[in-house]
Length: 236
Picture 1 (cartoon, rainbow, N blue to C red):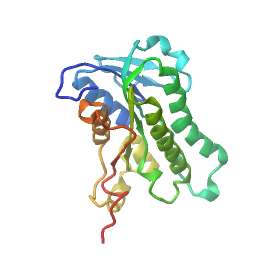
Picture 2 (cartoon, helix red, strand yellow; picture 1 turned 45 degrees about the vertical axis):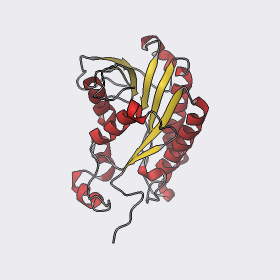
Picture 3 (spheres, rainbow, N blue to C red; picture 1 turned 180 degrees about the vertical axis):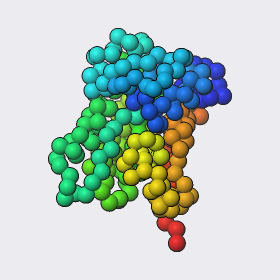
């Protein structure tokens, strides 16, 4: 997939496209001139005119297979239930839900699309996959599993398809804010990051678009961290 300053259009399937990072990626990919297929379980609040919006569940690719193009040059997988809570209160079914939506659904979708795929796949992990954070046991386990899946997949699909991951910290989207108790918590959370800021959804989306671009043509099996330095730096 080419980047925004190049004119060759690509067919980009974005799963989990209706909100947050996924919706930002839809807008950026359209602006870059790519042919966008946006997939979500529910319709968006507003539908861009320059893309094909598909309503479907990633766990059941057969239900929307007839709406997909014959070739997919870029696939971005954004869905994944974020489950937070202390170990003593987590239920096994919550941990399974996190793993199902983050790992198994990604596996199911990608497996079904293998005959169509070329170019690049980007998966969304989290800073929590490799940074110990309280109340993150379920989502950390799921995102760690996704990273392992993605790296093994990169080896399996090379050289035809590149596979990389973006691992952001909390982004202040509607879902992100609901997880942490609203905007009033943002200053405290920002203070834990070396850059004293949280990445906006469009920053994480831009990282994914870069990984699909020709500028990342030699990158596969990599985890690009958009986390304000949280995973690598300790200041003070």
